[in-house]
Structures are given as C-alpha cells and as structure tokens.
Length: 424
Image 1: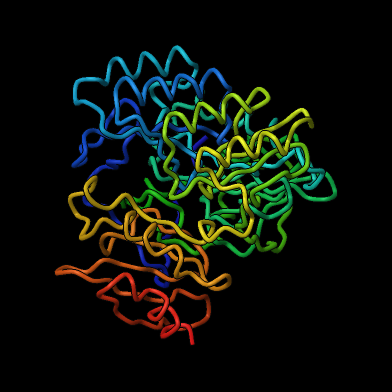
Image 2: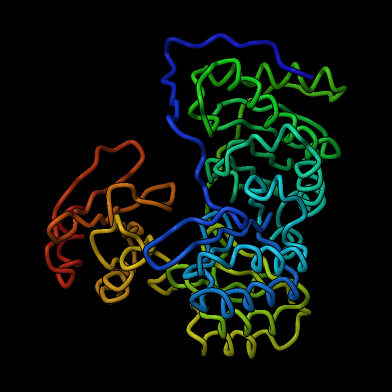
C-alpha cells in the first residue's frame, strides 16, 4: 500500500544527494588505498561459529588477514584483490551470510547484545531480529533503502535506542513495544507480536515519503518533514495493515555498551580500534558457545555455558583483546586513517595507540579522525581529534548543550596537556 503524498515543511532542512548511494557491501566493493573493501552486514551482530570461521577464511585467503568491526556491529574485510568479488560472494553465500543479493546492503540492524543473557531487559529481542531480517529480505520495496538506513531493536534497557537509528523498536515493561522514527519525540505503541512488521512498514513509509518529496535522501533525519508528520503517516499505514497502535512520548536511550568481563551468562570483550587479527577472531570462535554477538561499540559478546569463564577471559586477554572494564581502550576510537584511506592526513591508529598512556582514568572519550569527514565517529559526548593538512591535530569537544572548545596539538606526546587545556 502506498502512502499519500506528504507536504514539505518550511522549518525542515532537506538533504538531497547528487549521486547514488555508494555505501559498500559484499557484492559491490569499495576501492581503498590498501585494496578493495567489503562490508558484510551481520544483522544484530549475530554470527554462528561456522559463519565466523568463514569470515576468517575470507580475510586470510582474499584480504589482509584482519577483520574490522564497524559501529553497526558489521564486519569489514580490507586489502581485497579487485577480482575476488565472485569468490568472496560464494564463500559468504555458502555460510548463510548472503540470504538475499538484492538486500545485502540494507540488512543494517543493531540489537541489544546482552538480550536474553543477563536477566535485564523486558524481553529477548532475538525473535524480533529473525522476523525483521526475514521480512526485510522478502520486501521488494525495501531494496530501495540506502545502505546507511539503520534499524535498532532494543530489549528495553535503552542501549541501542540511543544510537540514532532511523527506525527503533524498544520493548516495554508491559509486554509491548515502542516504535520510533529518527529523533522524533513521540512513539507509536504496538504489540510485541507486531513490532517487527511495524518496523518494516515504517521503513517502507519513509521510502514513499522520500519519493513524494522529490529529493534523494538516505536517512529519516534528512527528510524535509516535521517528525510528527512522518510518524502520522506511519500510523496511517499501520492502521491500514490492521496493526493497532497509540501515540505516546518517547523515553531516552543512553547508548552504552556492555563492559568487558563476565556479564550474566556471557563474556564481553572490547576490540581495540575494532581491529581483529584472524588468530584473535578464531580464539573468540573457540571460546564461544555456539555464536558470537558483535556490538556497535566494537566489542564481542560470547554466550557461555557458565563454566570456566575466568579461564576463557584469560585466554582472550592473552591475544590482546580487552577484558579489563577500566582499560583506557574503552574510551578511544579511530577511523582507518593512513595508509588505508587516501583522504586521511595521518596514521591516526598508530597515533591513538601511542598516546594511550596519556589518557586520564576519567573524562570524555576520544575519537581520532584522519580528515574532516570523521568517518565512523560515535554519537554522544566526546573529544574529536582531527588530523589537519600539514601536520598536527585539532581537538574539539562535542558535548550536548555546550558550545565546542578547541585547541591544536602538533605533537601527539602533548595529548594529555591538550586535553587538559580544552576540558578545564
């Protein structure tokens, strides 16, 4: 069913793209300075051990031997040969990682990684995840979504509800679900049984609204409509599809990932800068009890059988993974930088690692970027460390409700002093 045309809002600022969506996938690779790049969508971050092994094989046989975690719980393979696309697709297809070639770039779904494992949350979101991914791959309309469009399935604890997804479904204590669009201040309350179908209908309504506007937009926040108008259109679509709903105010999310260590019936580890050697990845697969859950905070949650947890953590720590909840690595992120990106002004990962000892135990997290695009930067309060042409870095605070404070740093050894200067 199509949605009636929606009128533009004079208060909204449209974003209209002048080119198609070039977001990489597994069938369309991106040319980077260190070789071709593939982005493998992993809905909810959930991988079977067999699928994890297949990704490690692909990284070693076809790429640079590393697996790179993204801020959406997906996996990137880098250093690929230009002609390996067919072989890569075959490997992923055989492992069940390519269920629909027409939808492989739009299966962007994050989910509460500890759902069902630690006794928190209103319900286990795994049924939602399975239902939404199945429905998404069955929808011809959904093929038109951008590779940047994001769904979030929150079990009620508020973790992925704070990630700024285009469509968020959050479980509620009364057994229902709240459906939210972008940053809208209101939600549509639906039953838990209809939540996954409602999420897909919301995305399809967004596509109808985008077509009606005549602009090429990829995200809900880019659509030149008031938040409540798109939500109203989604409500009409739900009514037409027989899904009962009511409108309410929205709860806030906090976008916090699970801390490293033993958490409920799971182990949680952090991956420094999201970069895993194949040997580290294989050790994670050996420790896992059936599956791995990649988190949007560049970590991995491993469901366990409740035995030998401390021994398993020691094994993972010995590979260089972070198991200490007080590690400064938890507050440091970076884009790929040089030599992988031609636009980068610096080797930001090396500089970030080299200044780890200068980070105070408490304070704002840091995100290092090789250029002004700040690819992969997190939401929330932080210090942006951006490489500048000609050398050096510009440090700027990004704190909600406050204006930015800025200073420059020409020697990474002065990071502690530069941070003290802008945060004092």
